[in-house]
Image (cartoon, rainbow, N blue to C red; front, top):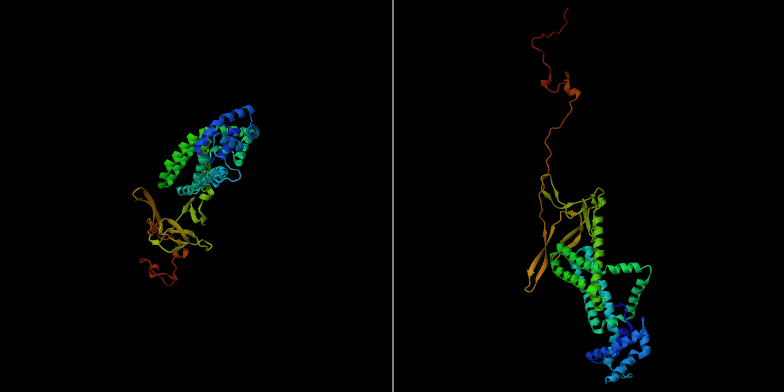
Length: 424
């Protein structure tokens, strides 16, 4: 089935608009009766039949609808005084398809942006932002089912999009690429399902509450595998596969960016010890040592006793200022409360607590500040070795004129006579 709407489909869409003040079931019966006749006229015109060709044979769709009214004994609609309900029908025939089309575009763009942010931060809470495009998507889907895919396809913007894709297929520079992408369609839907499941498992590994998202992502992946190959037969399935594809593409780009950032933070230059604070991914100051962030610093004296109220400065007298965190009150959780160079900081401990609410289980974050030192330090003692001295010459040769102590004075041997005068 061609992506571009046929002349019969466009012509019947305008006939349907002119008959919408009649009961919906009777309108469908009328269209089913005339559809084969219109198809024969289109076949007689040959390939590339246009709406203008049918208008030359049958008149405008509005005049043809008036003839169908007369042949079926339905009340005619006065041209001079159309009722308020009929006016609303005519307006809705234009507004509803356009809202359905642009609702699909906006909801798909929103899903892609949310997936990109979730892939970049690997934070399951970011997926809560899908609640913003969700009403737009539901309204678009409701109006699609009400107006019909033929009216949406007859919109100028939808025709432009279909014509652009046709030109890309026929263009010599892009035809090969388009054909190659067409061969990847079956594998693309399987890849979408695998990416959604992997994304759910990754979020679940980081956040336990994300386990509730995993069945939903698996269901969406299975639906995409089922609906993807059937889009050409039923264009309404675009409202399922387009948002899924946008979500997967956004998640892949976000995950790629997060991987590049992770690899960049582990380069040899970054792994070296940093003496100054750097900014983390949230813009908060942090100190890095050995390639990892340091959240706290503990100081001990020579006896192994922890010190408090220690202020850190570098060799230039500049304070080593880091971001200080505390517990958010009253909701709990960790939050930034300021920056200073005073250490150590209280340890911030956050835990997930499951609370039974009867019909469901609610996970709450409980935060606690712990001022205790989480470890004890064994300060190495200096070995008690006597100082090594080099004896000087004056110390090794006693002085007769100035002995340092009485014990250092020489004594005469008892057997040797002492003479005070020389002998002749």
